[in-house]
Image (cartoon, rainbow, N blue to C red):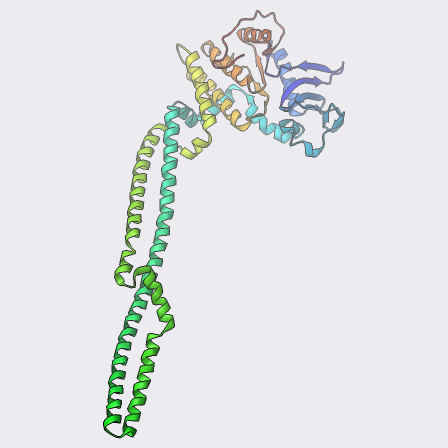
Length: 429
């Protein structure tokens, strides 16, 4: 959202303050007069009674935040001349939170820019600032390589676990096959022995019957017939035959066939071990380069924050290009903190044109840094509304030049001769 105007109830009548959707500069050497206008805007955003806001959302909807004296605050749809329903607040984005003063206060912790806050941010974001000064393209290449090697290792470890399970299953199957083959061989031996004995007994019975009394040969004949039946039963063991037929089909019915079944597994294990070794070696090399470039930063975190880091790197290049001559450590912290804040806002509010309230920074930093500060503010105004207060006359001249081009609004009580400044690199103003 961005603020179109602020209406403040006064004893003599409502006081109207128009704002520009991109850049509004409140400039005056008079500290109280300057801050009076600046604080009026802040008071309306804070939700002070008697301070009303007219805002627009990114979708073009108009919203009036009405805080009439002695009445409950309301968000009004000016087209319907009626309050918005509760279920419409999410659609309105930040505009739907204007009467949620706790949420507004949380946002202003980020959106209110002052020298002290920027120095604090510079210190807390020191690691990000250092990363933004590394070779960015090389950083992403190494980060992607580390991610790929980690995924390869994870995949091979899963395959290794699957191979282990398959090896255990194979060992159980081999034991089962060995048992079936041993049982079949034993059964075949028993069949041969029983068949041989049955043949001998039947021959003896035939001899007795033919040469002696048939009565004496009958028992031998019965014993021989029983042995033949037992031998037939052995050879017709259905369960054993089916199990052996399965082994015959898979392994050729021999121990050698079972052992040959391990060859493919050995090749697969060798290939897996080679891939693991290569991935570990590549990962070690990538992590060594990464630690030299990015220290202890986690590659996956930086990949997810790529846009923020690349934008921060662009802001830092502006500062380095604009600032020549002597550098002041405190001024560097202020501008670095501002650069980090703008990159953070792009991450937190990628669509919303959130208003950014900037306390006078031009009077807080050396003139050598004013050019870089102007460029950062202009870059910010391309994505969000910036409301700046300043006592610096050159800042007022710059704002006057932006106002002539339709890119900003200067609110001042002094005569200001506009001075044109160079546009932001890579962006039209």
